[in-house]
Image (tube, rainbow, N blue to C red; front, top):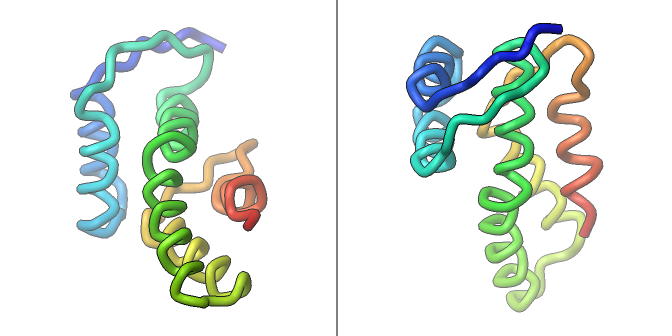
Length: 113
């Protein structure tokens, strides 16, 4: 595979061309506002997907877990919390690319409560 250097404009253009909800686009713009160009050995779309997944681990998911901890204190069940997580990820509507597990992987790996 060829190496593709990504920059912020390329990412924003990709986000704008995809069928994401407005909220998802806002989240992704926030995620990448401090993004520095990185070199990946993937297609542009795969690289963006990987970036989104990695950023979700540190930014989006941590925000979800903050909400989760609040809901736990309020007495919500683990099943309810997991459903909230699934809704959170589905709302991002991240495209599932060929050879990538996409939403299922995100939910499986980061939705454990």
